Length: 188
Figure 1 (tube, helix red, strand yellow):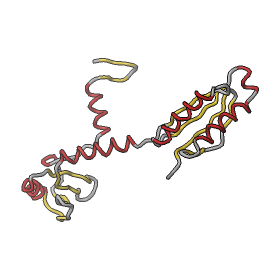
Figure 2 (figure 1 turned 120 degrees about the vertical axis):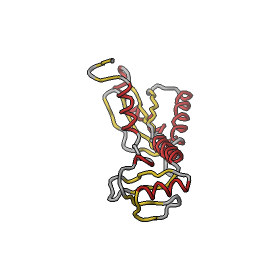
Figure 3 (figure 1 turned 180 degrees about the horizontal axis):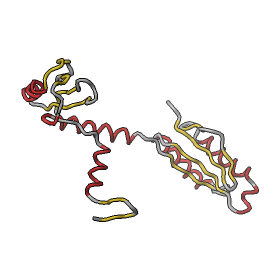
Figure 4 (figure 1 turned 90 degrees about the vertical axis):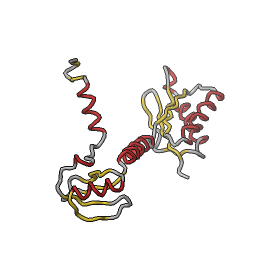
């Protein structure tokens, strides 16, 4: 047994975390209720039947009996291929995770050269076409902070050049050593 900072690290913790992530379904003989509301393989309502009748119907179809709504009275069970069902649930979960919007940051300085600025703008354009937000930061060092208007010129130039693929989410905010602005993808 291994202990770290008061947390148990071992195979039991891993099993518990998996159970939290994945909803546990009762399948076939694990269904406890004596009667169930049965839904057929094509989604048709077959009514309230005994558990044994539902299991027999599932075996006859060559599929599994899965309890999809255990809190109903009587519980709702469906005849389906459980392996395929789990695969589709996992795929759906991965798809929802992949759809999250990311925020990418582009950092420039007031004295950034034209060529380097073009590279940064092209990179921001790629991020916006991939539907990611872009956080543009104009950083100031030392005495550069006394000339914030130079940084605003650079920021306005970036916003102007990205106007075809993105729009400004909010007004640029001034902070002591930088100016920050968020650009979101333009809706087409």
